[in-house]
Length: 289
Image (cartoon, rainbow, N blue to C red; front, side, top):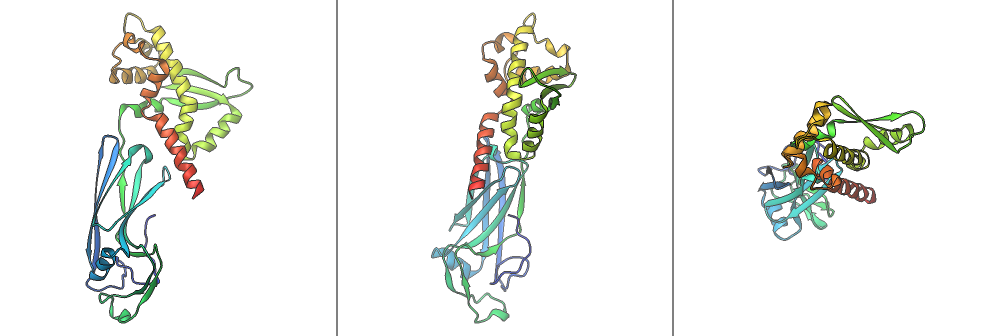
């Protein structure tokens, strides 16, 4: 919900055309990524006695509206304190978060007027409805940077289709830098439509990539010779997987064999199961609103 310049039916304290004199509203946003959570710290700076008094008696509050268009995540946090701390599970967001810092009315205000209004509004009062914006600062964007070797694993898979009737719902083959996953033409058409929506992509990976990756882990277990990984000598795509296995602590096929193949597949793709369920949950909640 990025705020742009617009006309309000009442004075709104902002940097555009607020209708206030000698009053200011600013916010300072600091973020950090820690233990899988994004911590957002917002410090409000308000210089307006009238708005401060409304907040003090509970008629208004500071508010932070967060939205991630990529995952359709959004939330609003309110407080009568000038400092708001928010922790977001990093699995719920991707690419960027839009941050809108506001002061909003908690209740209807029948006689909204301030000595800080510009001369044109001297002696004028306004009717304010609950939820209306009383002040807003310039919007901010938080860029989400998620790095790690697990990002490389999904990139080696390519989804395509195979004409005719398939003996199996999907087939796969290693081909140089890519692992080609083939599905029916009808399912490929469905896949392309669903893949356009960010909320469905983790679930699609669960449906298509996890079974293939599980199969590949089983092949690696069986074909590795003399206690070392050997498939990377056949196709480059296997090297990405084997390097990631080593990074996860599976230095040798012997250690790999102590785990089930499906468990290892999910480890290679990070929090895919959680991401899938959370993304679908967010989509359902969005549809219900």
